Image (tube, rainbow, N blue to C red; front, side, top):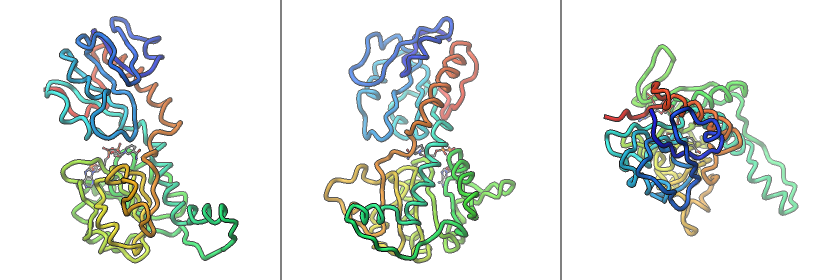
Length: 305
Ligand SMILES: NC(=O)c1ccc[n+]([C@@H]2O[C@H](COP(=O)([O-])OP(=O)(O)OC[C@H]3O[C@@H](n4cnc5c(N)ncnc54)[C@H](OP(=O)(O)O)[C@@H]3O)[C@@H](O)[C@H]2O)c1
């Protein structure tokens, strides 16, 4: 396929496949000649909310055939592209980065690292008994690409993993989400890592919290709105939480999440570490090569119709 590609990284231009003109765009004011663009990779911005210039310019690309995201989530663009445009995401590019952060959140919460960091700043030496990750039963709710990467990191910590996806896959020992009521009372830690869609919005709410044992931990590295914030706040510390994504995101300065007992959060930084960029650049080179050669694209989440 020829035409013009608008992508983020310089090496794509240097290695541009024959027949494909590649322009660079890292966000900000729109580049010229948008009306010629057939392939657009939206510049990476991990936690941007709403529609900004990177997304607004999609409406000025009448020849667009492929919209490529390098994020795994694509909920933010579904309403912005016509049906004939093929949508591809960055599935896999964030696995190492996001899984590592999920582990960091689990360990920080279990071993109370935020507490010791505050004590250090206040020159206080106050040891206390600690929870462990070892011997815990950990549910991965959203056993997909990142979920598998989380499991690979959890198992060496001597944990037992319970796999849950939208539908059961008995051959892989994956439970369906309908089994949550039976499974939740038996787990110590739940890691949420589903996409945000109509089925997952508010998926983890008051009834799910009610089934968890006291002092259980809920980690969310998927999307903020998968977890019902009011239901979490109502726990008042009975169940703990370590979040990379929140609803609202970011919480307004006077939001109760900032002070909620047993709740730690990081500002949506799980996926965008140094482990992401080399994987994303290599993927984009290969994807542009496929597009230029007329080969099937990777990571198609919604084919153009
Ligand atoms: N915090 C960050 O910085 C960060 C970084 C990267 C990604 N993310 C988020 O992580 C999400 C997952 O990424 P991924 O690459 O692992 O996606 P994926 O490979 O598509 O896996 C998603 C998993 O979620 C499951 N799922 C979907 N709907 C469900 C439901 N209603 N109930 C239970 N499970 C459900 C899917 O089940 P099936 O297998 O049955 O389809 C699948 O196992 C992304 O969509 C994005 O929102 C966050």
